[in-house]
Structure formats: C-alpha cells, structure tokens
Image (cartoon, rainbow, N blue to C red; front, side, top):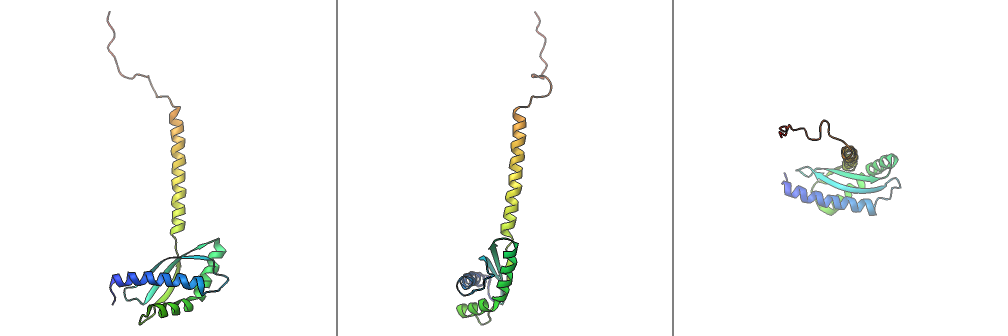
Length: 142
C-alpha cells in the first residue's frame, strides 16, 4: 500500500505522460483538442482515472472518447515504461465536467447581474409611498 504523498506525486507524473503520449504518439484522426486536466490514482497505484476536456461540439466529444478508448493500450504501456512501477495502473478516461459547471455558474451570475441592474434602474426613478415627511410635528402656535 503506497502512501498518499506518493500517489499524488505519481498522479502528476502520469498526467504529464498521458498528455505527452496523446500529443506525440497517438495519431488517431478522431482525437480532438484534448487537455488532460487531472489524474487520480488509487492509493495502491493500480487504477488511474484520467479527467480530460475537449474543445468542440458534441460530435468532437464522442469521437474523442472513442479515440481515447482505442488508444488506452498505447498510453498504458507508455506509463509503464516511464514510471517503472511494478504494476502499471489500468486507465479510465472520464470527461471533466468543470468547464460546463463553470459556464453554468457564469450564466447564473450574469442573470443575477442583469436583474440587479433592472431593480436599480427602477429604484432610481421611484417615489416613496406616502408623505415626503412622514413624522408628526407639533403644530406651530402663534
């Protein structure tokens, strides 16, 4: 059983290896503009989950997923050669959902900003309800 520090160091190394292999060795035309965002290794270093993002539309996403699945053996053998681990970790490629979530948060924030601007514009031209001076003053006796 490896410690967490070694697993973190090894996951950074595996991320670099996967990115380099995808860029230089995998020649699949279905592979789009892929960015490897994170790799998570189990504490025993036997399974690696590779998170990636793809630039493009839904067809680019599906084609890239298929290309990554077909290139899994090449990537895994490169990891085994470069790391020298006794057991090369098995790979699972998962599309990273962070960009979509960030885009959704930005849309929600923009809607909130525009709603605030509308309320502010309405408030600038609003008149208070009731008298301008709502407090009672004693009658002036002369």
